[in-house]
Length: 401
Image 1 (cartoon, rainbow, N blue to C red):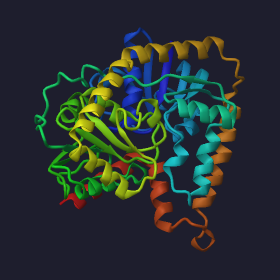
Image 2: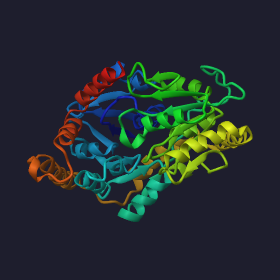
Image 3: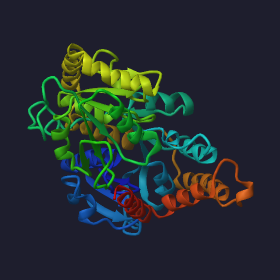
Image 4: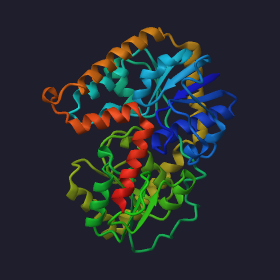
């Protein structure tokens, strides 16, 4: 099969990591795989993922005369670029309901993203809750392929960055900074309010220091992340929206447990009071209380860790997951009964996006619940992702100094 994935940015992120896990294996299985981006990608852009440099990385201009068997949109924005790619079938790899990433005040943007799920695209997703959402809301037939785990990188035999200490509890907070629905900053603050002995921070954000943490790890290659998990007793992850809630599961594989909200996707593998602690109230004091329980009740901590390892042992590898993904691709190409016309899909997508563009271009006095700053930032992120990424990195470096 000749397959391409339309990717918005090659920067390190959970979503891009999942795409590359599948793409590299699809290539190993004998498929012709291309990653398509708006701007040219260099080896240094993807050196965080081993094997990514062996894939074909091309721009939309580069693939103008190619014809694929299957073209995947990934992040919602790439749906609007499908018309620039020639393919026998078009699909959408939905890793979350991405409208939920944005503030409820951004009604037009959230509606735009929701509309992408209604287009005539074959859909593959990674989480049960997403499949149920798309099926019930848009009556879409969805191929469910749960993410795998790199068991060679996440297991209980890994040599930790720093050994756990009996009688002490080391908390790990994981996530990017300045992303509202990830709540990374809040997790650090609440961990510091607790009785935890140490607080570590693992982030994809390029920073050199962060107040209130005992150790900081920034932009760590996935092959080294397990060493950090293996050093910590509990991961505190307070995202309000996730697709497949990956980091706690990775921590489970390394002998830790978790404290989290009842975020979308948590119930794929987290059982409250069995292998982790879940806050259904999402109250700050509840999070602090749950961390304190792990400090004051070592038997509970040990039990949760034991059950977390049992959960991890039952979870599939990436090899198993990607074989299922390949099978889903084959079924889409050979069996899908969904009628597709890329010209029609492109027209609908353009109409959707032009409505949003008109909204963010409206003079300030006519904009409801959308500030000028927010509109400018949103336009920059949509139109110039590479520039947006560079400026964000500069801002974060300034903040960390």
